[in-house]
Image (cartoon, rainbow over all chains, first blue to last red; front, side, top):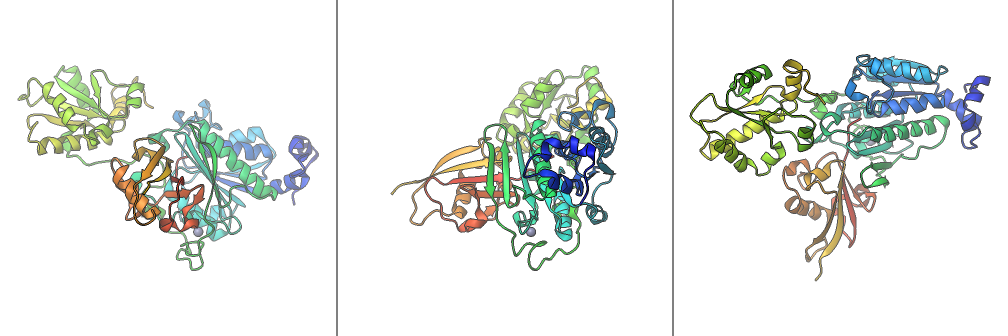
Length: 406
Length: 100
Ligand SMILES: [Zn+2]
């Protein structure tokens, strides 16, 4: 077991005098290593507390770079490290906090080819990732290597926490044998997240990892913590034990080596937004082409199909907000009436409707819905409805840099 | 012949499929046999889901990625679809989160 130096005894004194922790617990923590996969909203607070508490060795794995829109929740990073690899930004921050610990950075995308060799270098794994494929990869890797997995997740105002693979407890696959349909998965960039929510869950992940590292029992093995910051508070749910028929940790496992997780989940191992491409090219215009329509003073309608809360953040002048979900829920007739009644020169083929959203995905769905509805009702042949490629993000990047991106 | 009153809760984003409301007090109509969770899921599909039922139901069960709890216990421990609902049961449907 690792020995504490005189300086370390002074540094960790407040937790050394806890009888449940003591010198023994501190030395055990110093002798342990934790890999944090994802140095984001969960991984940052987790790394902070593990480093502050004196974990012996900390691994920080992330392939991504720091962006301005990360800083509200990814509290290891800071303004002057925007653009820096998150693993390195995180290392600089925790080394500044505690120079006694050793930090290893892994600036890679974790996949089946590198996961086992990286995970095997650590005693405890923290799942602080943001996508389904990597969650299955981490689970299977930890089961195959026999390592505990401290899993956290957060979205909007809610968080979830549990420890997998701890002394006969279930693994992720015991609970979720099949991946969710990709259409049901929302990421933080689409769904939003209040920064302090992953802060709470990431801190609790550090607590669970420290309890394991110090030789105590984790609280949330075979238990799921639900945190609802809006109205539900904290609740604990009793989960099923390890399932004998589990594909990876069961009695006759069918998964004995890592598989292709992007294929298994039908989604990519990142939280980058999926690109939709469903419209004919003639139904699409670039932001530049749309800006020429505007500057040329050509009459047209601009329909913004984002959620109302997003429309209130920023919108283009003379646009009208009808969220996509309203179009999907019976507003098509009303929208067509609006289009037709505000189209005075209906036979002028240059007169058209443009549909815009945040990134150019929902706008395509909206154009498709509107065109199909118009065709079914036999109207609007004289109206051309097109979407703006890449949405308001592309507008900001290619036409008007002063238009906010969020 | 009385109805069966239970409390439903949707979280983790599952509430977005049922009118963005997390809590639903419901009364299931009287029927000759006891209500099972299997029948409750069909009832929810037919009565509460506004759209895109496939984001909640697969076959006769919930879609992968939704945990079902009855009175804070994983339904796997209670017989899953065959569990017989009791008056005032608190049934929670949690969509697992993946963000970080
Ligand atoms: Zn398992």
